[in-house]
Image (cartoon, rainbow, N blue to C red; front, side, top):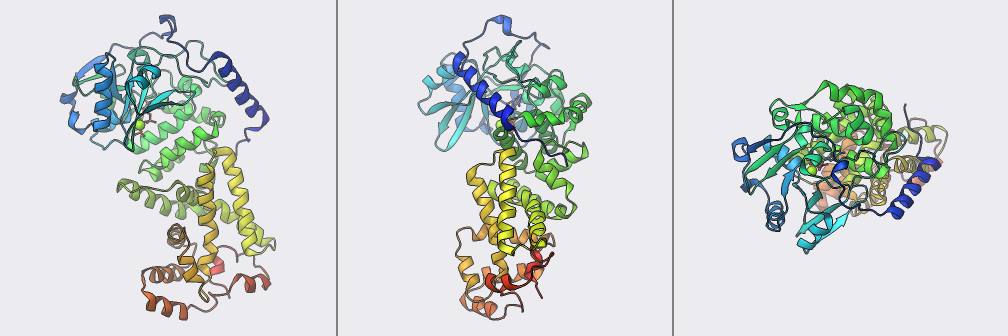
Length: 472
Ligand code: ATP
Ligand code: MG
C-alpha cells in the first residue's frame, strides 16, 4: 500500500513559517498593477444566456439579490462555477457562487450580514437566513507566486480582471460567467463548447495547474464522475505521474475535497473513476484502504449506493456515518488481528478504533465531532449482538441507535453480519411493546451472552467481528 508519510516536523515547520511570513506581509495584498496579469489565452465569447437555456427565474433569490446589489453599486457581478455549469446541463446546482470586481472589504460594506473568511483564498460569505452565498473577488494568477518546493501556490489573493479570473479557474466548464440581470454569459475558454461535447478540460497547462494545486487532480475525478464527462487526454495524462503531490496538501483541505467527492450523489462512480485511471494509488490514503481490500468491496458498494441514493433524493448525509463506513474495513482487519492475538473482544475493538482514528485524523484532519460520531457508530456494533435480558431495550434508547442500526444493516447487506441478526433488529425496531417482548423471549441460542461471560471464553481468531454474532 502506498501510505504517505505523515506531515511530520518539516511540514509543520513550513506551515508555521508560511504563517509568520503571512503575518509579516499582511494577508490581503492590495490590488496589483497590470504587470502581474498573465496574457489572455483567448478572446471572450459572449452569449445571450437565455439562448443557452439559462433563465433568471431558476436563480435563487439570494444569488440574484447579491448580483443586483453589487451591480447597483457599480461593480461587475456574475454567477460562476457549478451554478452555471449545472444549469447549462439541466442539472440542479448544489450552490450558486458569485464573482465580482469588488474587493472583500467593498463587498462587506454592501451587505449587512456578511463576513470575510479564508486565508489562502479570501472570500466573503453573504448570509440570507440559513443560506450562504460565496462572493469571490476576481483574481489574477501571480507571475512570481509564493509556492512550496513542489510548485503549490500558497496564496491566491491578488486581484485582477474578469479575464485574469477566468484563467485561474480549473476547468473550462467552470469558468463561465453568467449575468442573470443582463442576460449574458461570458466564456473565455470555450467552456460552452466543452459542455456541449461533454468534455472535461483543464485551463492552461494541466501539469502546471496540478502542481500549483494538487487538489485539482481529485476535482478531475469528481467532475468526470458527477457529470459523466470524458476527460480530455492532456488533462488526464499528467495525473498518474503527479498523484503523490496530493500529500503536500494540508489535511483539512483534503478532507473538504474528499467530502465533496463523496457528496456528489456519484460517490461510487467517483471511486471507480479513480481506480480506472490508477488514480487511487497514493492519491488519498483513505482510497487505498477502501479500494484495495477485496473483502471491503461489497460493504463499500452497499454503503456508497445508499449514500448516493440519499443525496439524489435530497436527503442529508452524515459525514460521521460516511467516514465510519469508509474506514470500517480497516477497523475490522485490526480488530481481527487483535483478537487473533488473544485480546478480548471489546478492548480489542476499542484499540483498533483508536489506531484507525489516530492514523486517519492525522492524514485527513477529520474533525473531532466527526471522529466522535465514527467511534460511537463502531463501538455500538457489538451491542447489537447482545440480545439477552433488557439489553436490546437499552440499546434502542441510545442517542445514536439509528446510525448504529443503519450501519448494522450495511454489514448484513455485505454478508459480514448474519442476515438473521438484521432481520431480528428490524422486527424489533418496527414492533410494538408485545412484539418486542416476544422477540426478546426467543432470541436464537447463543445470541445473548453478555460481555462478562464472553470474556471467560478463549478468544477465537475469527470470533471478533460479525463472527461473534453466531457463536457456538
Ligand atoms: P460544485 O457543484 O461541486 O459546488 P463547483 O464547480 O461550484 O462545483 P466549487 O468547489 O464550489 O466547485 O468551486 C467553485 C468554482 O471555483 C469552480 O467552479 C472553479 O471555477 C473554481 N475553483 C474551485 N476550486 C478550484 C481550484 N482548486 N482551482 C481552480 N479553480 C477552482
Ligand atoms: Mg460550488
